[in-house]
Amino acid sequence: MDNTSKSMDKIVALCKNRGFIFAGSEIYGGLANTWDYGPLGARLKNNVKDAWRKRFIQERHNSFEVDADILMNPRVWEASGHVASFSDPLLDCKECKMRFRADNLIDDFDPDAHADGMTKTEMFDYIKAHSIPCPHCGKHNFTDIREFNLMFQTFRGVTTDAKNVIYLRPENAQGEYVNYGNVQRSMRAKLPFSIGQIGKAFRNEITPGNFTFRTIEFEQMEFQTFCQPGQDGELYDYFKEYGKRFFEDLGLPGDHLRFHDHEKLAHYAKAACDIEFLFPFGWGEINGTHNRTDFDLSRHEEYSGQQLKYTDPFTNETFVPYIIESTYGLDRTVLALLCEAYDEEVLDEEKNDVRVVLHLNPAVAPIKIAVLPLSKKLSDKAMEIRDTLSKRYMCDFDDTGSIGKRYRRQDEIGTPYCVTVDFDTVGDDVKPADNCVTVRERDSMEQVRIPISDLGSYFSDHFDF
Ligand SMILES: [Zn+2]
Image 1 (cartoon, helix red, strand yellow):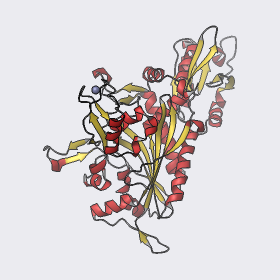
Image 2: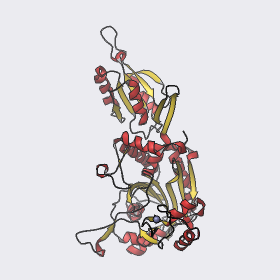
Image 3: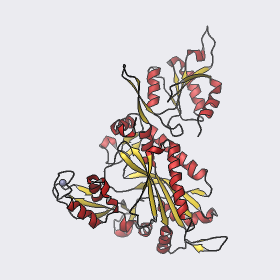
Image 4: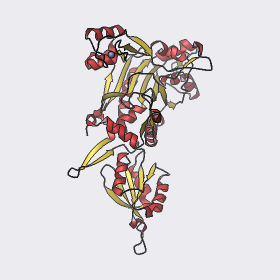
């Protein structure tokens, strides 16, 4: 199936019915743009984190993980520029009172207009010149464009006055930047070195969001590489490619990924590029790589009064390090994997037999092996096998319904292997036990019979994670 011919409605329904993703606070009617990961979604998400951690922290030299607090000193967000300029350009329809993002109105009107390169005034003039109508009521009578800060604000303590304002972090990066000196000293790190972090961030966006693609609370896997000025260009190119390879190895094919170089750069960036994935609803960003120069550490030096320079141990040269940032949207990566894996296979056209299957990379599949007794009478033996395998792999056990239906249930959640225990496995008064089971592979649906004692080596040969 082509990704663009897949139905988001069917993918959303599968996610809900099979325990991947539920609407947030569903029994209260939900909360717009919030989603909860169910048992299988949480496993899938954790498997993606594990794969990222292995690739970015474990396998790399000079790479350190931190786990910084979501709440930070509000001065951090003054230094980073978020208090002054982290906002969406919004306007209201004076007729129906609906609120819109000016850049979205323009992009929806003409995708080639590139609203991301326009100033507030240019956007307003464009909307006027082209008489772009209100998407809700069709009239053309908008307010001026105003900037709304995207940070979630709250108050520390009992008084809600300005001096107690704190923010939920809108990005993870600052947690890595403010700890640059701590990590460098405690790890005796020499440039170039990297700090990675997996964690939640929050943005008070009004744009509705294509399932989990755009949400107000989301998780990022961030990787910041501190380097000498002059090394930045090469590292920037390197991390663009490194990111694409990571996605390919997770199971997103190269022709469903593309680079999108930014024309208009954020205030801190010298170069910026997204990796986009072809979702059923079109291309969408799943990674961003930025050359942030020495902007961040220079600003934190200025605002904190602390010295954040690096002295090269060989040349004794002292300077503020440059930063190459590569950020991976965890929720978006999970959504991309689900959309890519989703497939409807026609097995028998006459009987209208269609198999829904998730071709997930086994490394990220929530369940690795399902153990299925052919009859409930065989459950004890099957449970024994499940208990052994579950010491190494996340396993499922299912003894209800026909074996065919149980295979299909596992196909729908992307389980790479099913192990079936039948009457030959345990034998009876007449026939001795053969102590073998049938192993069925998800994608080929091929079955092999192997001794129970070989299951351990069979799976360690077939799983390479
Ligand atoms: Zn309107």
